[in-house]
Amino acid sequence: MAAPLQLTRMHRVLIGVVVTGAVIIAGIGFAGSYAAVRELALKKGFGNFAYVFPIGIDAGICVLLALDLLLTWIRIPFPLLRQTAWMLTVATIAFNGAAAWPDPLGVGM
Image (cartoon, rainbow, N blue to C red; front, side, top):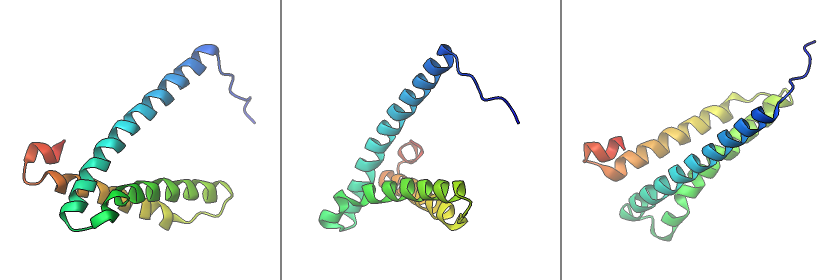
């Protein structure tokens, strides 16, 4: 059995920088995606549901992946959870692209 990993102070600082950066990037991505998908949902006639629709998609991705990790950790893998989360990820990417359609640069962004 391998010895436990010893983290130095520099490792902890680096982990802190990575986690902070990841949270900032995720926040920026969520804000932009939320606005684009909400506007698309409003245009498509979702009414007041348009304000929670993007949150539901992103929360669904997070919950499904967390549940998949938990079940895998306790040795009860259920791959359909991960595949469903991937489908929701593809859907949110498609919705973001559709919100900028037909501007090719906007779709790419």
